[in-house]
Amino acid sequence: MIEIQDLSFTYQDEKKPALEGISLSLREGDFLGIIGPAGAGKTTLGRAISGIVPHHYKGDFYGSVTVGGMDTVDSSLIDISRLVGMVFQDVDSQIICPTVEDELLYGLENFGIGRDEIPERIGFALGKVGIPELRERSIGSLSGGQRQKVAIASVIALKPRVLVLDEPTGELDPQSSRQVFTLLRELNEEFGITIVVIEQKIMLLCEFARRLLVLNEGKAVHEGETRQVLSHAEDLENIGVNIPRVATLSRALSRKTGKEIPVCINLDEAEKTARGLMA
Amino acid sequence: MIELDKVCFAYPAQGPTVQDLSFRIGDGEFVAILGANGAGKTTTVRLIDGLIKPTSGRVIIDGTDTASSRVSDRARRVGFLFQNPDRQICKNTVREEILFGLETVRGEEGAEALGHRADEVLQEFGFTGEEEPFSLSRGQRQRVALASILAVEPSVLILDEPTTGLDYRECCHIMDQIRTMNREKNVTVIMVCHDMEIVLDYASRALVMSGGRLLDDGPVPEIFRNSALMERASILPPQMIGLSLRLGRGFEDADTPESMADAILRRKKEG
Picture (tube, helix red, strand yellow):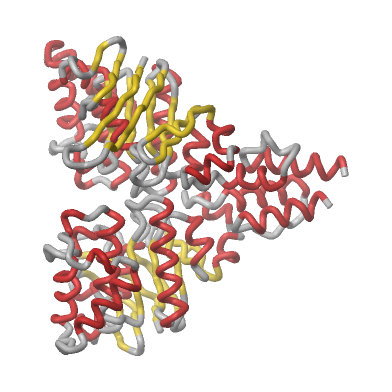
């Protein structure tokens, strides 16, 4: 679904590349989490997958990004956006209409969706995100979590095959954050939508993402299945990426026993490891 | 000393957001306020800051009721770090930003003394002063906001979700700096925070709120061990506490990965 080959990108007027030599291959229906410290290039990579780099943000672009068989450099942003939906980090910069319904309508009309199909699409998107009752509300009266859901709804109304989200839970409390990830899982499992999510909350990624990509200073540090990436705990800590306490625990146990103890990524695994050692 | 005595607060045309809130926070404490969205956490810290006044009851800071104190006196005593640094930064360089707060609150000390104080803070935070705040990363901007608050030397520091939008390293950096202020200068810290691992690492006491009321108040590791309370407040306890509860007796003190590993191996040895 997404093929990235040796991608490097330097923003216009910048000296340092934002991305350097990134290669990534995602199949349809994958669920990828991207993590890394501030300035690692996470947002730039999200922009490259959705074509905003280099179409909107100009700069030196090397290598290739192909989404659903389309080379993003050769395709128009309109064609790419029919396939890839992006939810920006700052949802308030994404939402432009005064009411929830207008916001969804705006994208659908821009895509030339037929008038007869529009009400069903709006109903589907709001229902999926779990906010049908907010349809008539003004954007200004919504909480941060609700606005986040409106931004996601307006993108899924367009039925993308790939959904890119840039820190969608940044301003949300733990419960709302889980709700957003549960929604992503449903979209992923029910409709096979490929999910790419930039996220700092490692515990959410451990629970929901099947693959992880760790970026640092524009380069890929590790990429692979979530568990396998977390087995490189030391590298992650060295670049300032948080790892779950249960993973730190399995490392401490390995060190103290002198035996190789498999990395734990959730509480169930940690309990099993502890009981196994004590038995 | 901060004292809330039977405090209620209702926004106009809404039901009460906090009800019958009574507690005391002593000088130099590091307190976290926990609870789900809508529990009344932000309203509580705004009441302490005097940004809003109680509908009934009293908020007393160092013996003075916020209902009758002057804004400038309160600003001198209580510093408030918002979730989003961009809502408080307004100047073009870090030095100007720090001086701005100082001149507003401690203007009577004169330009020379304030300039000296600004330089002290710049050094403490590792800024040259010439940086443009909006060209810095979010974590750095959060540190600029913190520096300009601490420059004034408040006795109370209020943090509303101080680590939102920061990566892990930035988060540790800013929390370590706050801990240093708390320990070395005896600054009272009151923090609203959704990250329970951070609360466990830094706070020593927690107030747990739900539906505008105080559910419980106690020392940090113990409060997380109260499963019924955590459920009522919709809080998922930190991972090591969760694990120690599952493993049962003998793991009560294991609240860090290191101490947990030791407890597991001790048990293994004992068979």
